[in-house]
Length: 158
Image (cartoon, rainbow, N blue to C red; front, side, top):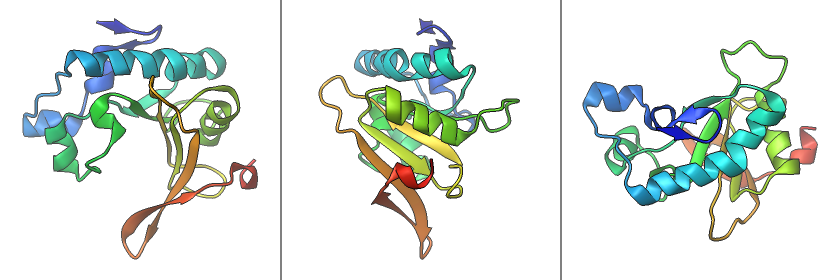
């Protein structure tokens, strides 16, 4: 089933962990609607501008989210979030390019510079809600072995 210009539903629900653990990743209808929105308002515009971008993670069923230790409030479980990267793809763009394009051009709920360095995140987390978008910009990092999120000033990475 096609969602947006560039993706099939299978691209948004695939998980090697779910396959290995035999976890059903079939999203309910309301999750499919949310996936359609995050693709329409974020992913498709990113690809229109930057070219092909890899979806590292899209929908996570509650069982998968628990298995991988995801946050109980993860927007991935609602179909509202995507983790994006150019990692492993031949491109002159970087994950920082994705981050800054979204920041300066698109509506979003959360935009997270996920780990990596001060020059380039390991991946970009972005969420979109049709109810209310907070435009929250964060940076994740490890502190004493735990992931913490800080409000992020993206002008420091431009």
